[in-house]
Structure formats: structure tokens, C-alpha cells
Length: 441
Ligand code: NAD
Image (cartoon, rainbow, N blue to C red):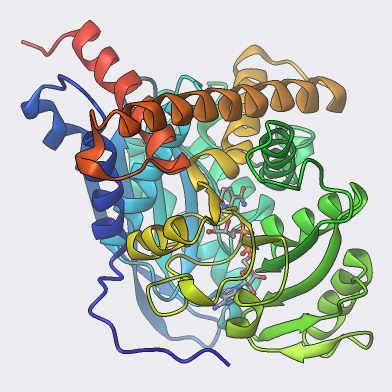
């Protein structure tokens, strides 16, 4: 068991996002000081409170947030999550990650994010439907196909997106409103490949990183031992896709705990067990382990695919993987980043690793606006191209920053990470557009 040392570490996700941003700035020349504040803080934060009839006849007030972080490169884009721990600061940080992610993979969006403070596990389908419809009504014209486009995130799914579309469409009759939200069911304008896009993009990105020789002695996935935290959309799909490429899934977990088997787990059988029992825990051909043990599991690749701030100063030294692939948003704190870098553990950052979701959301948005339907080959081929390109660019920039660091030119004496490289690219792209568009008036 890992011991949670008392630490002075700040686990506020926005503080960590700001630290990442400030660290990247040390590698950028000549950015106008006045632009920095504009680029880190959200453009707009909406906080709505709304009443909902519960099944037992009572009325409860819910809080919802939608943060539009930046839209100089295009409409805001980012998921909506339902979770009891949602806060305005968390949503703002997640929206900032979206701004940087859409810039890294070079799609014409900015960044946004939303959330409702609720516990979906304790809510009926009808209650979730009423919460969703009322939340969308409260947001009004703050979302729209050309202003800010939501998508699924933790504990929201295709059904939630269908309710969002339907509510917005009823409020804006007579228009093609399909592009107001992505991650919809196929029958109402969803894209093939969207449901597994985050994990598939993570797979393509990992394969490309290995091909580029970034991890010594590991050029391909075949035979790699993989541990995955979180067995929802991102985590369970990653288990299936990595397994199909020859990786051995040695440990997985969800909110109730984890399981392991050094001989390898069968992802489909685990999913069937989870669907039946509600958790991966108790799967017959495995040993039960805790989530702390999962993060410290002996493996080559660790994939956090659940919540933020999971790997911190107090447990980063216990990580045994050579590579961390961040399918979750913000799973590492800045202090964890520093510790892992010192220990030679490579981190493929969230703004590259999990960008497949927003890339295929972009494909869905394009199909909706053009009333087109692409086939799966077209979606996957284009996704692969985007992910490979993002990884190639990030590694290229990383190598260039490392050269500068060896010359002692930049970075305040520190060594760059892949996250620094990706963020430097994103910030430069966004700052360039701000200046090209010019600041009105
Ligand atoms: P999901 O709701 O489908 O699954 C979340 C999983 O995390 C569940 O298995 C849950 O049991 C598990 N979990 C919750 N708390 C946990 C804990 N304390 N320890 C271990 N596991 C825990 O959500 P998702 O869509 O798979 O999203 C997971 C992460 O991936 C989030 O950080 C999300 O922001 C990120 N992400 C998702 C997408 C997407 O398209 N779905 C895209 C980009 C990033």
C-alpha cells in the first residue's frame, strides 16, 4: 500500500494548469506580457443554479458551470461532466486544457468545459434527463454550433448528448442544430468512431511515440505490460484496443478498486463482469488490488483514465512504469511531473494523448454542418493522421527545446518535458492568432 504523506501540494486543478502554463512560458521568446493574462484565464464563466423535480416528489437545486476559456481559433469545445466534486475552478482548468489541446492537434476550435454538481450513481434516468434539459435551457445561447460546442465527459454519454441536442433544437426551431453538441447517437448525427475515439487516438499517439524511439527498449506495443486506472469510456476501450495490438493488460481499476493478473487480463470479459456486477472488482481470474496499488503496479505503460490529480508528490516515486499515457485530463500534478521527469519516466501529456476525442468530435461537427456521413475507415484514417502529426510535432519541438536547454539558453535552467513542448506549440499558435486577428477596437 502506498502511504499518503502529508504534503503542502496544491491539488487545485486550475493552479496546476497555471503552473504548467507558466513553466511552458519560460521556453517562449517575445510573447507580449499583456497577452499572458488573457491566455490563461477564462473568457467567460457561467454558474447557474436551477431547480429539478426529483422522483420522490421533492425539489432539489443543482449547480452547473460552463466555462468558455478561449475562442480565438474557433468556437469553444469541450465536454460536460456530472460529478459530485465538480467546481468552477476544476471546470476552468479543464476548459484551459481544451484550448491547448485543440491548438496542439490544430483543429479550428477554442476551449470550453461544463459540469453539473451531482452524483449520477444516485440519480434515476428520468432525474438525469430533467437535470440535463434544465441545464441546457439555463445555458441558453451560451452554447451553439458556432459559439461553444459541448461533448461527453465523465458520467455523461450519448443519451445525455441526445437530450442536449433535443433541448437546444426545441429552443431554436427551423435550423440545422445538429452541430450544437458532439458525441451524439449515430441516428441523430453522431459520428462513427466517436465512442472509441479518445482511446483509439491514445493508441495511435502511443504507437507513434514508441516508433520515434522515445522510450528505450520499447519500440512497439506487442508484449508491453499495461495498467489502466478507470474502466469507463476511455479506460475500458483503451484496454480493448491496446490488448488487440498485443499489449498485456496486467491491472485495471474503477472507483471501487482494482484487479491484477501478471499473465494478462481479458478486457472484454472484465467489461462483461463490470456490466453485470457494477465494478471490475471481484473478476474471477484476478487478484483484487487497491487504486494506490494499481498506480504503483509493475508495468511498462500506466494509463490514468479516471480523475485528475491521481499521481502527486506523495505517490509519484512509487510509479514503476516507463511511460505514462494521460487519457484522463490533468491526472498528474506539477510536482508529480517534476519527480517523474527526474526519474526518467516519460509522460505523454493529456493535451496530446487524449485529443482523439475532440478530433473525432470535430469530424462529427463537420459532418453535421455539411449533412454528410463519413465511414469508419475515413474517420480512423484521418484520426491517425492527426494524432501522428501531433506526436511528431511535439517530439520535434521537445528535441529542439532540449538542445536549447543544453546550451543553457532557456527554461530557467530546467529540462523540458513533452508537456512543455506541446504547450509551447499551443501557446504560440494561439498567441499568433490573437495578434493576427488584432485586438478590437
Ligand atoms: P467515464 O465516466 O466513462 O469513466 C470514468 C471511470 O473512472 C469509471 O470507470 C469510474 O469508475 C472510474 N473512476 C472514478 N473515480 C475513480 C477513482 N477514484 N479511482 C479509479 N477509478 C475511478 O469517463 P470517461 O469519459 O472515460 O473519462 C475519463 C477521463 O478521460 C476523464 O478525465 C475525462 O476528462 C477524460 N477524457 C474523456 C474523453 C471522452 O471522450 N470520454 C475525452 C478526453 C478526455
